[in-house]
Image (cartoon, rainbow, N blue to C red; front, side, top):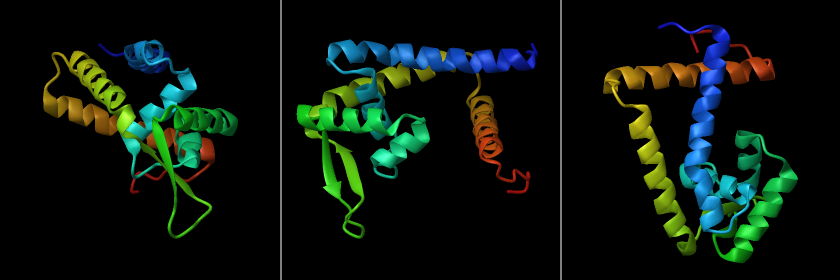
Amino acid sequence: MRLLPGEYIQGLRRLDKAYRSQLQQLVGEYELTPGEMAVLLFLHNNAPELDTASDIVRCRDLSKALVARSVESLRQKGYVTLSRDEHDRRVIHLALSEKSRPISREIERRQSLLWSRLGEGIEPEALNAALETLSRLIHNAQNNLTGEDTHADK
């Protein structure tokens, strides 16, 4: 079954919607704002490689103001800790605190559940190939948006 180009984009939106709905309940359960959940989710999935507010703004395409408010609120609630970079004091690294562990465990559980549902009936090799291809498509789309060269030999 081959889809039309627009159907692929719509399919990606559905994947995003399924992912967000899987985690949306946590917002209410832990009395978080969607922005706070976005920060926690980002740190859960990407820290310590990507662990600054600037990383979140860049990778999630969120506003600086939203990320700053969310980080400060999460700090006040005790869900994240902040530490200055030892080489560049202007850089502040974010980390999930001990208090955030139950949320992290639930994020992990819900992500695993979603991935197992999405992968039903797909051989692991085929799923890996699809994810590698999707990663390349996303990379190429980002390069297209930023005007970078996207030769296939990269």
